[in-house]
Image 1 (cartoon, rainbow, N blue to C red):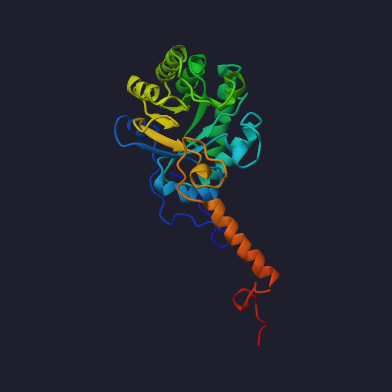
Image 2 (cartoon, rainbow, N blue to C red):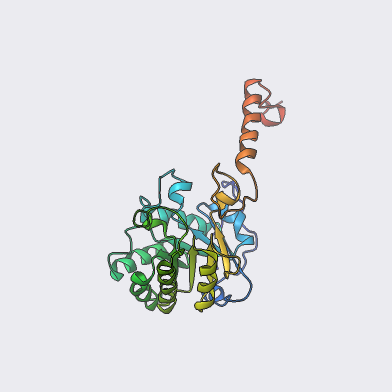
Length: 285
């Protein structure tokens, strides 16, 4: 259970007054074939607070490179960036399992390098586990970490860190060869000890096969409703960006609402209607 509290006298964020018992990695693993796992990305304390009561897992995704920093891809994201945002999300959550993405270059060279990076993530953020991309080739890394007490979530199919090798962000598994390869990836990662697997951008039939083939929860993103859970980038599903990927359902239009609110503020500043009597401090009598 998190023991972190926020000073309400100095912080704009409101801490949960009665912390709930945080979910655990075994609890998530045991959801296989049961109630779907609800997972969203979070990068900041305040967003974590808003998402936490509704989610089972909060993913501090390396997508923060694009969402927060405006980078062209996830490749420039650093371990220090992931740790800073991971710690912020842990501080803002009481209930959800927090998982932090391992950024590109922090785990591929060797199992030992992966352990060093993952150990830093867990020690400096308080997160419950890490997520890393890759299939059969990364299975030895997953096994090395899990045998040393570091919970690992796998990520197969469309793996954004390998976008240059994949040649883009298109759906995976359309050819028979790729279909078989991704299914092998899922089995290898599960056999290596991963407690769950994200299946991204794979054709629906393949997603269903993966879900049936492995004994751990499969979390879909652009996959299938029959997966054991779903994950989206929160800012995508809230409509904060103009472009909406095909696999995203927009549950709101926050960009439009923010723009309208700021337009009203700007008009009131220019007309000197803001600040009004309620927002200024009168002189003492």
